Image (cartoon, rainbow over all chains, first blue to last red; front, top):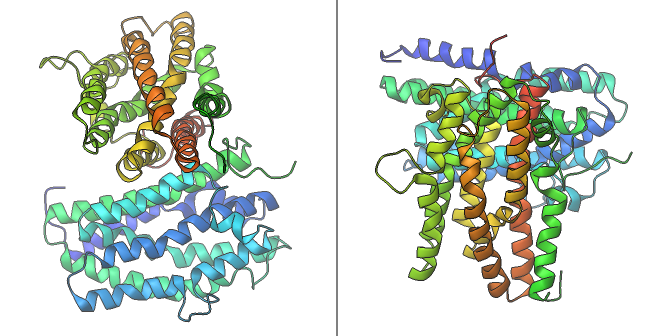
Length: 244
Length: 244
């Protein structure tokens, strides 16, 4: 990548990464959407993905801590509020809504929030994301959130599929996903405009595309690990084992 | 874990972690040892594990950078020399010997050393190890290398099995493993004595056991990812794909 792309060409290249690598193409997503998952597979997904949810505000605070511009910090902090909630009541926000799902799957709050039962591969992938946002350039850290461009569609598929196919799933337990698409839309609009404007060299553009590829790998690896452990039945030592 | 164990009890607890969680119990190891791996599976293993090998001296330098005692630094730096080599010739040392294996499997040096073809899950697991050694206490960082207690046995099994079963494997291509067991024995003798002496509270002892559990998870997750991608055939986007 030695020539400078136009902003539209850059956006097209980013959308191509999503078309080829986003986890809406993963067999675990198709299985969940189509009603082929067991209850234990959904439980394992909810339990593990809690760790991802729990680290998102930490990732975003890491990014904010690297921003010199108050306006940019104000924009980005909405993400923390979305996840941690507006009030002091610990009842709203994405993390609280995620816990409604793990509650419904029968986990205690301690089992979930201690994260002691998750797959090591989940932890490694999620921590890699937080570390990426701490160590790479601010532009790359911001660009890594561009998977949100593709999330409204996967959330729509997932929610409709899960409500249609699983009697243990209700719209209450999926409230995380009801709230999320407009937030993701707003955030990805901002991020896309930001990277279109700030990627002023071929090297910047290459780094932005690589950051999005990296992030799709973080998401894909989590579903690979769930598939291996809970569809194929190879649960690694120490992780949650469903009752036989 | 609220009571202080004796050093012998601590050592027994550590050996129990190995008995339950070390990757000599992983199906991929059994498959490789017993001659059931395809050539491509061995190639994928060599390609991915190169990244682990390449980060070991970085992990050890990170640990040395946290040591105040010159004698301790002198002890630990032998590990860097073992991996990076004694001379300026770039021909000895564990990493150079590992490249003899990836050469034999048909990869170019660029394909291997760029690490652009490895599984994202390999990168996440290995980076988690380096980060653990940078961020946790020095005692935990040191303790995480205790998997070396168990490595001479797995290396013996692996080497004998591979030489017996695969005609593309020779003692030259496995020279990494010929050199490694006495180094691992020496290093783990030191580390075991160190943790026996320095774990003076139940909290220290608990942290040491948890560090070893963490490290076994790093090794196990790498074989899980190889199995999922190359035994089951679910290669994630961007990673090396064998010729059909």
